[in-house]
Image 1 (cartoon, protein in one colour):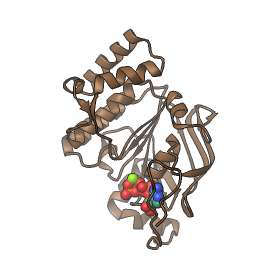
Image 2: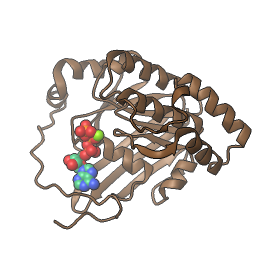
Image 3: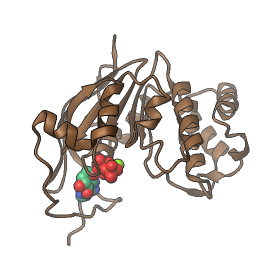
Image 4: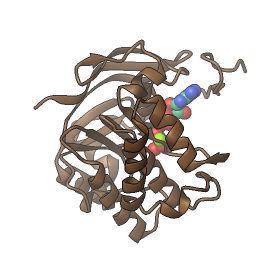
Length: 266
Ligand SMILES: Nc1ncnc2c1ncn2[C@@H]1O[C@H](COP(=O)(O)OP(=O)(O)OP(=O)(O)O)[C@@H](O)[C@H]1O
Ligand SMILES: [Mg+2]
């Protein structure tokens, strides 16, 4: 099976802080993979480095359907179909969701009539019909924002979908709905990487693989039983099985300027 995403020896740092320390991971087309890991282990950083956020200096290899992404800009990665739903979706007051989708879809080269059809179909699938005239994510509930993120991705013909904590802050029913929405995104042309803290969403999904990230690396991979082990014994159980030491407290915090490649000077 071809890999939608093949990551090898991916390393990333901000200033002198090493965050990703050699990530290896493959997500074949048609599969949904989950990453679980303690706070601060590098999961969101992995998402940002995949999409090309400029705060990080990265090395190693990220292949999207065999094409190298390292060194390419964010927009080129998005055009190739690498799309991310954010842990904290951005609110964009004043920009209507449907007009945004029309702009982005046409920039991506989707013909107008096809785009209109896709917006309507995805709005139906993700129950976003009432939100098309509203500003993007503005005044939406947590669950509505997560659905909106997946709606936007589905319109844009993704190849690799990265969903960062798509189930955080959701009520029990919304978690199930989001899981169903993830299954809607699944297709033989797409590979999906889902970050989560909870095994609950995995019960509603046919997750093909679960990976555990600790201290900037994938330390274990397995089936749904791995998520259950984490639920029962916490990360400590995995650490002691693998002989990994508990993390030491972080020594320094560097704030990044979102508009610059460099961290702020403190
Ligand atoms: N731009 C940055 N500047 C400095 N440190 C950073 C930056 N981005 C991430 N980090 C640090 O890298 C580590 C990993 O952060 P990251 O957000 O990737 O963790 P995470 O696994 O997503 O955690 P959570 O489960 O809490 O969302 C943290 O210690 C964080 O403070
Ligand atoms: Mg995170």
